[in-house]
Amino acid sequence: MRISPRGRSYERHGRMGEKRMTIQEFFTYHPRVALGFSGGVDSSFLLWAARSCGAEVRAYYVDTAFQPAFEKENAMQLAASLDIVPEVIELDILSCKEVTANPPDRCYYCKKRIFGAVSQRAMEDGYTVLIDGTNASDDASDRPGMRALEELQVLSPLRMCGMTKEEIRRQSEEVGLFTWNKPAYACLATRTQAGEQLTAENLRRTEEAETALRALGFFDFRIRHRDDDAMIEVTRFQMQTLLEKGPQITQILKGLGYREVAVSPEPRKPSI
Image (cartoon, helix red, strand yellow):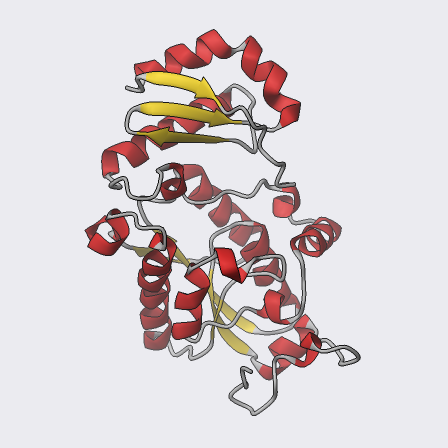
């Protein structure tokens, strides 16, 4: 059981009949926080919630080779809509051998570096409570990065308050955050299968390929690769469009250096 610095249990919502902590209660207990901010659905809502609850919040965006340009643009746009200017931390994630080796638990090493950098900067700025946007729908058994958050004592208010992704999207729409229907976007490193070395070149190629498909109207999709072969994953709703534009897409991807281009036999499960 995690106990807050004020001695109050955060796990009140975990047992039948016990009252669930609210976001307002969390920020009442912690009125001054540093947020690891990605610009995604969860951290965007959390940034809004912190401000709305009267907390003093400073947002930190960590810029690495794993984040495509549009993600940073979205993050800055969302923050600006709340009159917040995030602190941008430049981090050379590819200098970490444990990350570039791309083991199955790569996310652990990556989160450790990213939130370690945020923690250090936040401490220098006088913030002792660090939070992130992990929510109650996130499966801890499938997210080694959560172990890093625990080791670094990062708090996850949305998860602690039992807020699911569905609820976060609903409330985000109600308060007018444009991120409410933003598709989930895992970092570029997830496109490379575990065990295959992560390089600046394959990350750049992945970003260019996905940018090209986005320009063609696709959303909520992935382009995964194994060596120089590309595998496209789209939702069932987009499958017909993918087949119609297949020759054009193949030409684009081969122009970026992919050898073979295939479509995943299983449609991607929608993230919104």
